[in-house]
Image (cartoon, rainbow, N blue to C red):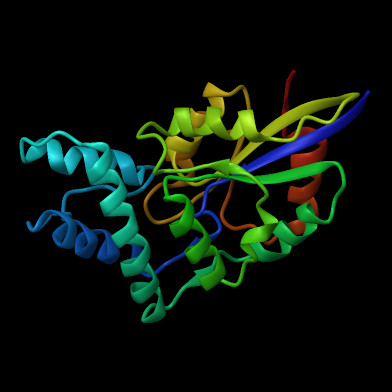
Length: 233
């Protein structure tokens, strides 16, 4: 049976670095939406989700998160992120763009997102780093669920399922949370080591492959498409 590989990519630290624009935008949007400041100094954004961070900040202030709060906050966050990105130095992770282009050019691969970013914010960051957001045809996003594993499950539900193929899944990330999300959907985890999480951290988390960057385009393409997936129905 023909193999079909679904690749789910994280954004921050995996595909690009946004120069702190996301954190700055989050702080501004929170203040504008709720008329109070947010102390983000101790908030770890690595592997987190926008909705999870928002809920945690409101809970610490004794406030429950309403549907209206979510809508107002993410509307402002999109606007503030666009402004923050305009003044930031946004760079692609070495090798990320060539690898993404390779994968999007294959008929036996579907490339999607598994990100803690809100959907519209994800597109803004990708475009700022030189990626075409249209390369990522589906995904799960951080304004839908607070738990990254739930985001992963949503991405799986939206992934193409061509008839007569054996689907395999691979998660591309940079944190132990990405590895956990991969495990939740029965996927393999390819992770990029960085300042926040080292090779040792990611190996201990259970990553199947840890790299320092994505420069080995051909080797990583082969691993993802030929070895890097776990079968799902």
